[in-house]
Image (tube, rainbow over all chains, first blue to last red; front, top):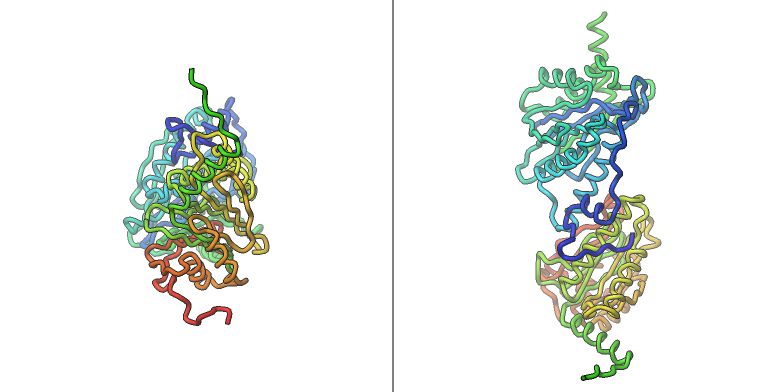
Length: 261
Length: 231
């Protein structure tokens, strides 16, 4: 890519999406409904005393088939924030990639990072731009969670397909299993949860969603595939390792076994 | 009807070069040098907010001296070129050499065809994963590219600074020592106050983004305690 230069009125400033359009690198719009395209499903996020926990299962489905078992729907957006996605997998992954680039691009061009709320608004604009694809069944419904370094708290946002942006106080769930995951969070949530309790609650919410929704994957003990669970606090993003999750799920499974014995 | 005066091309180029050089010499300089974990850049800069050294990409940094608005434009153009390449292909496909070439084209063009040459000298540095292939490119106002192995100086008095750097440089410097060395060769006889030094590093093993700004210790520019660090 040769070095792009712009006249004063044409300069795209800190907007990477606009820069892509100016140099002619935009994606072509969706041509029609693609009902069998892979879809990603359930993600949850909740606040705890030190920040937020964000988690998502690993399954992507095409119609009634499982198309991926190891998809990562929860990804780090920058040092102190993460995005989780539900909806059409292709556009969602692309949206996240663009979002990550946009945050870092803004930070470098401007010399300071966007505020957490600024990042949430930026993501809303991207969801809104995806509206034509959403009308064809290729909608993307993300969760945005992060640690607000100016206020020293964890914060959560969810979105609708039209780009509506809603800040949530305690917890949020999105995707096909969100009814069950959301109910589990609602029943289990209390203020002042610590890190471990919040991880357990997120894991349980995904367990309940997988138990009742065929498009949500549970922990795959056979293959050693566990949901992606991450904690974001003042120290930034940290993914919870599989060993810790295996122990959490072993406890949940013991409970389930006991209930049915 | 008046005829334009004939100016020999040699004279025209010399005039432009003199103009650019004068503009650059007015500002304060900077130096970049390798140390054990990467490349450190030390600039003399009285401003805390108008930066001379900045991040371009994961392993690439930019530094400029001369006219601020001109090298800042180049900085943003570099970030754009790097981000576009990384987005279109892969983050691994962004490299300092092609950026340096793009900068050279741009500066060379503005030197020969522009209303006036840009009054800037810039530096593009990249750290490699293993440390065997760190690169420092120095791009002049007329588009000349020079690549340096150990380090280089930009801006006013750069010949003298380069000579001091060449004499004092050693392999495998620790970060503190490299910062101190940078400040010393930059100042020469003078001692540059710590709050007028801008220091940043490209550091291997600092995660994906290697660029990091460094708070300067107060004694950074003070003469070394032993008269000769190599002694």
